[in-house]
Length: 348
Image 1: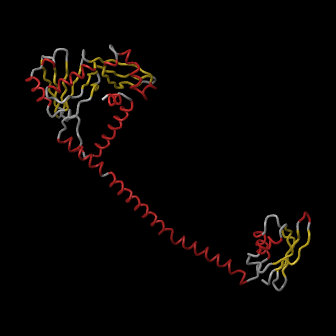
Image 2: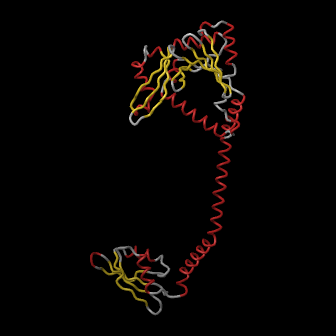
Image 3: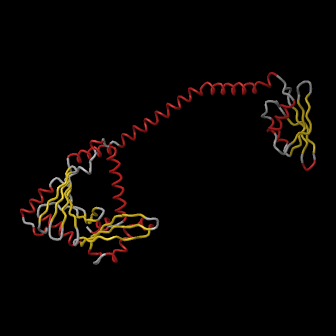
């Protein structure tokens, strides 16, 4: 599928693969030690294709052995293919190309190219490859990071050769394995294997089953965690309320007592002159001011204001409990177009 091949060759595919490796690593870290797949113990079979011979390196639980056949892979008969299939059975097989089937080189790039490494290498491929890059399968790996430059290992092989090898395996009853190129640091995958090219061990299947179960339990664990967190927060709130409850109740009672005292003050004593002046200052607009104020023995308060709106001032003062039944008794002109209004209250 050309679209899938183009996606695999893009930087986006590399980012997706890196994210998948991180996620599977996180899941594996959640497993108990005895359930984790051990790469060193996983069965692996490398089919190394030399110039005139085949070498098969089999590693099982960290113990390896190498077998050789003095024939090219194309020269194997039915018996040879059957023997090869038996050797790599239940292993993670891969074909590893060496010279002359694979060509390996290195390229030095500016460090800034690391963000779009595959695109940067692709631009240099026409100068690195011995043939037209369109005829190649290639892969790369970052091998060295310097202060200003990076070193990238690049491996390549003819696409026709890679496809022919996988087709040859399929024709002889072997599910086509991935094709790698040997490099000084290890191997680089040039082409993925077909479905079923990996035979997973019982431990692998059990580990991934547990990982799938952990994924399915994420909503449940999230909900339980949220409930636990909410319970913890509610518990802390309740503890704070128990500790601060007496003080809060005392403060509320003090505020209630002060409000009651303030409301009952006019009933038990005549307001003082300072209290009356403070009440007038609080009720009147900023533009009004008191010219005179006097209180008779019978408790009637009389005061004169210089105001631009005597009726508005009366409406503001009528709401005061210290000025019962306040009303305008006289109005005279004053300076600046203002009015000198005299007010009287009922006995206080």
